[in-house]
Image 1 (cartoon, rainbow, N blue to C red):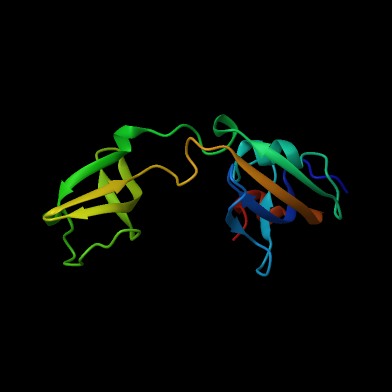
Image 2: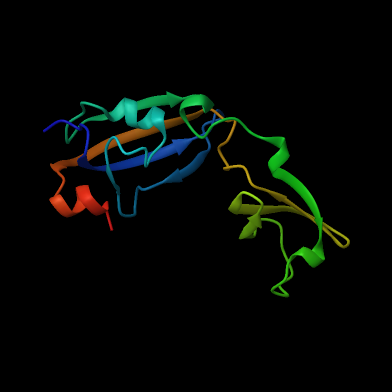
Length: 152
């Protein structure tokens, strides 16, 4: 069975950056299970997986416009430490959910200097080309509940 719109695909992947360093992988962990055609994975990956069958292994290079979009410098901001209201002391690399005028945004602390914290709301792969080594493990028809409610 081919990967197609609203079919459930199970995929192992390893993402690497332009230097070949591993960014993330499902190898040694549970594979990714997603409903194809629902924009739940990067567009470049979905396009590369379209029409593939269980057992296929391949690589694809995904540019930012088909990956995680461009990097927006406006999402890198400096704030006084007092903006963190739960009393936690932020550390570089810490992730938390910030409330913005446009709603919640996941951010990463990129610097703590004196009484100032710098956070970045960009996806870690925004503005970056990455390479994906993919293996299709399984493809099946979605159940009526999965079509109506999504994977849960």
